[in-house]
Image (cartoon, rainbow, N blue to C red; front, side):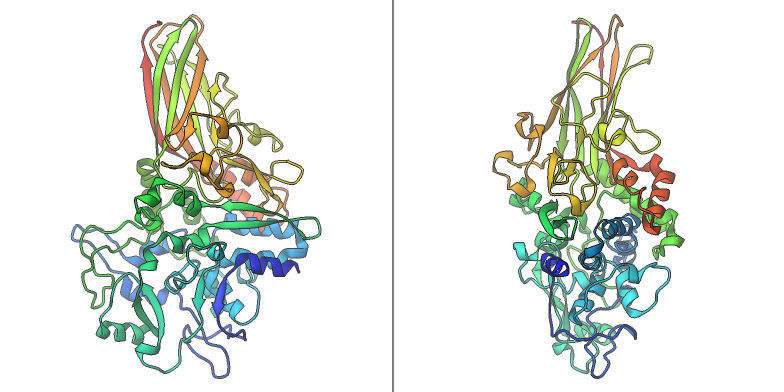
Length: 556
């Protein structure tokens, strides 16, 4: 029964007859009397879809860009591996079902073929990545790869049935059976391909290219980036549901949807010049999408590069370095802006507002609830002596003054006014268990006690669905809305004279301190390894999204 609810919750559909698929052999090779293969690994695509450079010299190769992305490394992600292990330890009765659901979007090709042969998806049987070379293992290690995304059909997209990995992949016709290109498995793309080139691709891969507009729609991304998690009780029974990741629904409630600015328009930005999509007989096309899938997780990309041998990373070191630079550039240039407004000294108090604006088409931060952004605010006097500091990042990766980092049973509320250094404005979601205690266990969480993540432009708090609602003090804060957040700071300066200097940073962490520290109690290889990585790299766990400063010269 426990396995059944997770299979139903994940929603994934393979239109096929369940039977055994061979676990070894070459990609695409059909074995008589056994079900066919549905996928090939990316190495079979790279030969034709690399070697692409713009007239200005920018390398926009699809394969090498993807290889250094979080999509390609979804199965190698050491935090994900540790988190899955933690959930199986917390809920042993549902361990197999947990692995099945967690593999749907992190090891989707292996999991899809497992379901086609009537089996559950597995995670730890395919690890470590540096080890297994059986076909199933290679499909698992390839993460979110070419032939999974480009075989998802348009069926159900944008509907609740498509969420939580509910995408549809046809299982017929199979790979590897003798037939002409017209009867081959379709691989969807945004461009029409003439018959001669269709034959070339079919002869090389067994796939036939098929034009379809749905590959450029946000609804395709929503299948794995709209996730609902079922909370489990002590015996593995379902006790609740949590809207774990809702970027698509947040986007749909924003101005970005009205303006037809899709997920792909930000995360797969197109090349300005006409470019071929293939280095072999490729024709110039308008709108080649970059496949680096630039997001915000520079910390994990650095971790993958630093521990590349242990994690079995295929991307070259320089490719990951480039991905980190692009990610940091995206965070700094296209994510948020801050400003200092109305700064003045009245009596012995320096007062000012910090205004924060979200530039993205979803909440900031969005996605997995380990992510947080916060205000780091300092005030210095004329001699550069610090008078006030809120939100300093500690070498451990914790935030000075943050209640949750020092005590896992507490958390910072949303503030409208701050006048003490131990008050920190943190934009985050805090999950709680049935007893109301904060938790970082996804399958223990039944609701959010706080969600004051910055909402996108056009977001209306009053009409937002329950799944994307603002929760806690921010829900009643008139200065927290689709235009941003305004926080009042009142800092006592005593008898000190101006000028005073105010400096503000909006900082971001992909994995907050508490989310790493809560793994320490789990005596298993994956949690131990990740905590070690985190502790070694905590000093570079945060990025600055935006900065602002102001000087106040005299008292009023």
